[in-house]
Image 1 (cartoon, rainbow, N blue to C red):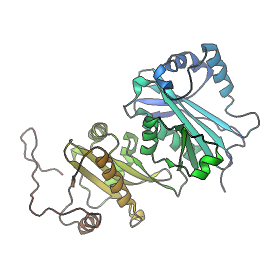
Image 2 (cartoon, helix red, strand yellow):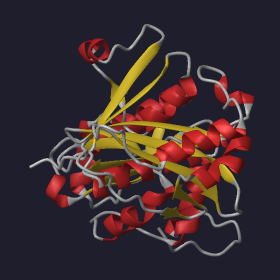
Image 3 (spheres, rainbow, N blue to C red):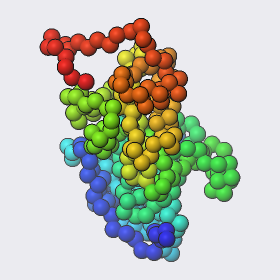
Image 4 (tube, rainbow, N blue to C red):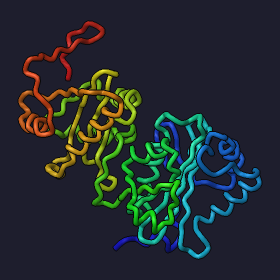
Length: 330
C-alpha cells in the first residue's frame, strides 16, 4: 500500500554530505538567507527578491508548520549550508497525496557550475523517497532556463506528457519535467561524488573490472570534477544497479568501469548507460570514444560488439607512469 504522505507533517532530518549539509529551514535562517536571495542573477527567468527581511522572516515562520492548514500538502524546506558556515541556497519539496512531490531549488550564483546543486537535489530526492514515501517527482521551470533544464536532465528527469502539462495548467513559456523514484523505477542519471562508495562496492564484485590506485575516492572525485556530466549511474529506487565512467581530453573520449549488478543483467541497463555517455560526448563535439576490455572477457567483448564498438587488432595498448616506474597496475 502506498504511504499517504499528507496525513501528518513528517519530521525533517539534517542531511549531511561531504562539504555541505541540508538543514531544515527555520525562521532563524531568514537573516542570512535574505543576503543569498538578494542575488539578482537568481531572478533572470522568474520571481523576484523578498520584499524585505521582515517579509522573509514571516514567510519562513509560516513554513515552519511544514504543511497547509487543510492537511492536503506537506512543506519540506531545507537551507543548503557549506562546511565553511556559509548558506548557499535552499531546496524545497511540496508533498501531495498519492506519494507525489513537486521540487524546487535555488543557489546563489557564486555556487553555480560546481556540481553542488545536482548533488544537493539528488540528496533531497533520496531523502524524500527513503524517509517520506515519495514515488513520483515533478519540477516546473521556465523554457528559457536551460541551466536548470540541464541539471534536471542530468538527474534523470524527462519531459511530462502534453496531457500532464494541460492537467497542471502549465503555460506556454513553462515546461514540466518528471521522474519516478519508486522501488521498481529505473533511472539513468549523472554519476555524482556521493555515488562513489556504492560504485566501488559494485566494481569490487564485478568480473572484468580491474581496480587500481586510480580508483581511490579522491582520484575518482577528481575525475568526475574534470568531466562533469559524462559519467552515469543506473538506480532502481534508491539502489545503485549500474555504473559507467566517461571522460574526454578534448579530442577523444574514454570509457571505464561499465558494470551492472548481476540480478539486472539483460535488461538494457548497460546499453542505456552507454547511450547516455555517447550522447554526452557527441554534444561535446567528441567524435570517437575508446575503451579497454580484458582480452579474455568474452561477455564484455560480445556486448561492445553488439553496441557498435570495433576491436582494434592493429593497435597495442601501452602504459607509462609519469614518475618513470614500471607500470604493473590496471
